[in-house]
Length: 211
Image (cartoon, rainbow, N blue to C red; front, side):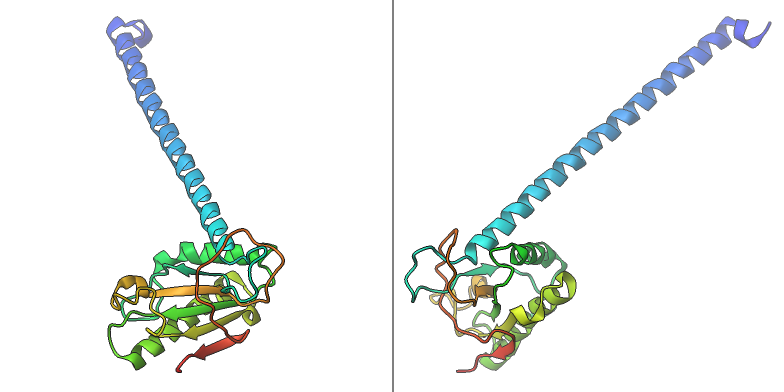
């Protein structure tokens, strides 16, 4: 009897088809679910990137009607470095990329930007002075080399622990930071205020503050 006419063989083949069809459906369903999860994650990441970029742009924008002696717009970025080193941690890339995007926005595309390194009060003053400058230079170098931000727009400075964010707790990790400052002359408009101190700096190169 031909194979196709044998009931038990036919049943076996049919059941096999059902089994294969079920497995394929499961695989397709799993892939669709994974694709949906990836798409949702990508959308959330894109939204977070836009939020980071907008927050940086607001922080670096001048305030409409602000007093002439108002502090220069500045923001603190939680840029991660290797322990006691100026080597950037790979996890710092997201904030640096957001900073670069903000610096390309029309409102900031011509701005002179200060990159000020700060440490906490752990360790000696001379060591922290060198470390804070090296970290500012590392961020400056990253923006120039990775993001093609014009070198003449960026100045790195080191303050060691001379400008503690939390003066009451000199060893607070919050004091270890990179401050981004808009050094350009006061502009005509802004989107948000900034409570950062009003540092002054040259418009290019690097400089260590020792006074």
